[in-house]
Length: 226
Image (cartoon, rainbow, N blue to C red; front, side, top):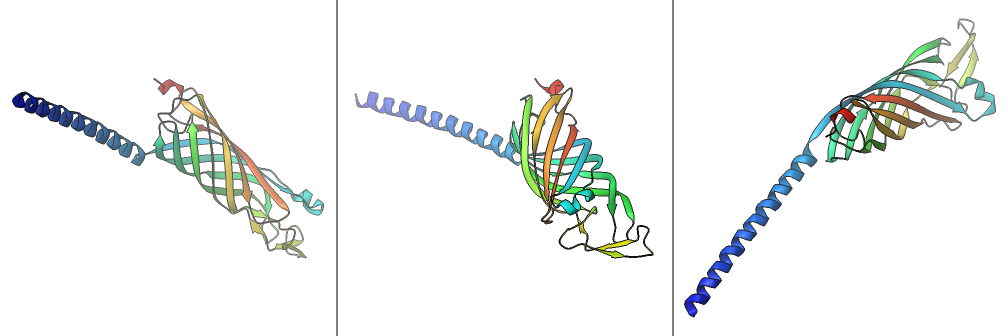
């Protein structure tokens, strides 16, 4: 009887040890997969068009409101969080056309716009493996630009006979500041279409600067879905 009881106990211990080992190995494998997935990263690239629309709320300066249009190239580094979502760092390298003044009174027509943004992405376009046909994103960052804007409270206009316009404008502010954006994504062929809406906080009290981008992201669309 004692021998039988000892044998049963030994078998139970052996079975328990095997189960614990299997569960531990499986849990460790899952942890490794999660660590590998969460720590991985990938690059994505987009091209498209952009429109920027600074608008003055002061009636005296509404005539200085202009529209700026251009092309954008955007490299994006995804820091993986899951198949259908990611945290990313993106640059939007844009070349804009449109009229703006310099401090010599000359009219300029070309400018750059360079926002650096951290976004949370979900659904389509969030990662190369995302399978949802629709998605979106939102985030914030900081924009750099050499495009000059008039500050109704600080910019001054002085007569200058040597200026092409007869005026010299001082204390211009560049279109720089905190950048807020959000938008939608959807599969188009082998890539993803993007609609970006954004605001730039330039620090100019009587100015609202907003814009829109239409972009195409390469290599993560419906033809890659399994």
